[in-house]
Image (cartoon, rainbow, N blue to C red; front, side):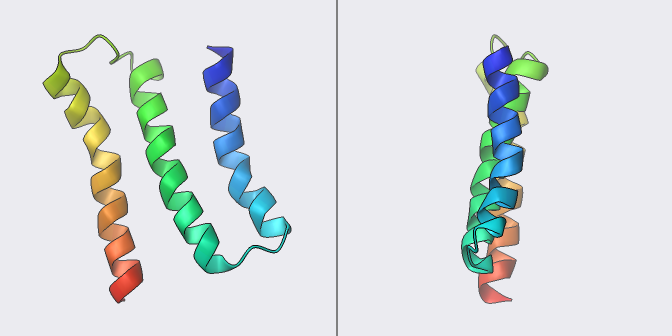
Length: 79
């Protein structure tokens, strides 16, 4: 469980560190999009304890993050 906590802390702090090193906003946006998906998968599997849930429920719980990120990324690209 400690590994999951540390991974979530790294995923949360990585965009701040990247911003402080001078990364451009375009890179930061895509970094955050990717980290949202990683964090959502970890939260669903470990804190909602869906690892052993039926596949349909697990996919439904994990599927919201990629869908939301895709929609927002679409607005970002074409907006």
